[in-house]
Image 1: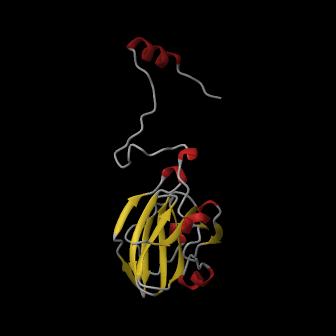
Image 2: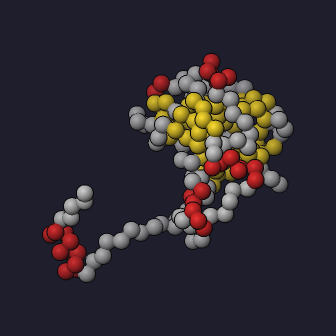
Image 3: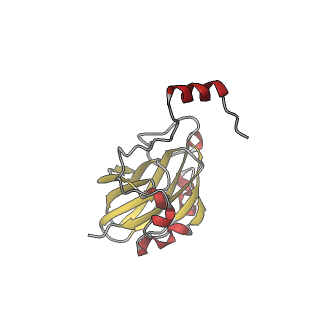
Length: 181
């Protein structure tokens, strides 16, 4: 049940003020829709976004083999309080005392740019052979599809680890897709 402060409401009325939500478009196109009925469907390689598989992210490098994901398969991963995670490489940004973190691994079959799309805005570190790989592009995702952050990484063949840190909730949905040229 909501309660209204009658004095504040009267003051706003007398001053001719209205209280309305204001949406900022500083980082978004003016054509962005928040109504999912106006969204375009995700591309074919991302069709699993609506029905992700579930896993538990790894808290240590020893657990990574149990947290393996596949390219083109959306995943809903459970995370842990950041202070309990022992990262492969210490991330640049760990997040605060109430943030969540975890790691997953995946295999890159061919050298290409791969895109990671998340439903939140965590810090993302890409790691291979104990070294971080810088992202080549960063952008916002389609809010109406529940996509918040989009990062591109130039990756070579082999096993890679994604470290998610500074996440505001204890789960993260994400997908890894090759970037079409």
